Length: 234
Ligand code: ATP
Image 1 (cartoon, rainbow, N blue to C red):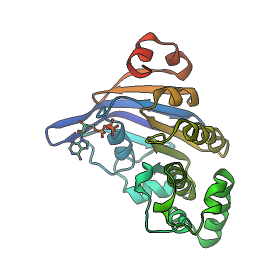
Image 2: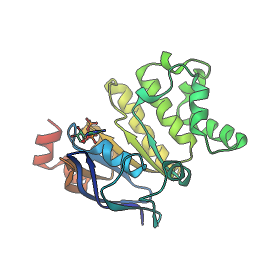
Image 3: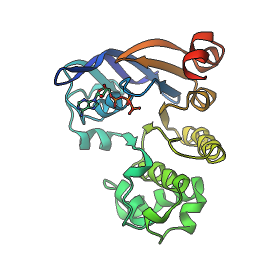
């Protein structure tokens, strides 16, 4: 069953057409990935789902409800959450305070419970609980960004470039957790430039070029596709 659906979405920044009619459907419990070069429109797509950029045309529905014009805070409250790139954590706040910020809509007792869930996913964050966010390693900061998003109890979790700037071993560790997050009932949209890792993790993939979806298929098929291998897997 489709949990999130985007129909013919168009976004312009002044004269630049960043999205030229994007349509996609995400099924409940799926891990999908969006791959595409720099500037293809991946961040714009996620930001417009979150209500952070104005849309020129198109429709977005979440669990059957039209959220095209909903305010960001209401979209977050309904369970669609974006985990931004790790550099968007608060460096001068402790790990615990960074996490608690993600629990903005939760009660204290709900947040304490979610905190334990985050610590089972990322035990290192428990060890670092009183450390400033900015003193964490790159991998730990990425875990903190994902942990903070998990505090908001997402139904759909969008991840913006979780592999960015990380060593391969750490990327593997983080990507392994996406399966566990899915088992917690979370549908995942993974935006990546590291196409190989993304395709190994995802069920399905959309390839975006210049604001359009040019390919849509199972991750398994795309890993075997000559065009995709040549363009995105080097
Ligand atoms: P990257 O991986 O580099 O972040 P992307 O696929 O996420 O790339 P977007 O950041 O969505 O791509 O950008 C899509 C297009 O829109 C690009 O041409 C970009 O220059 C342009 N763009 C993005 N944000 C703005 C903005 N705030 N104002 C004007 N143009 C923008």
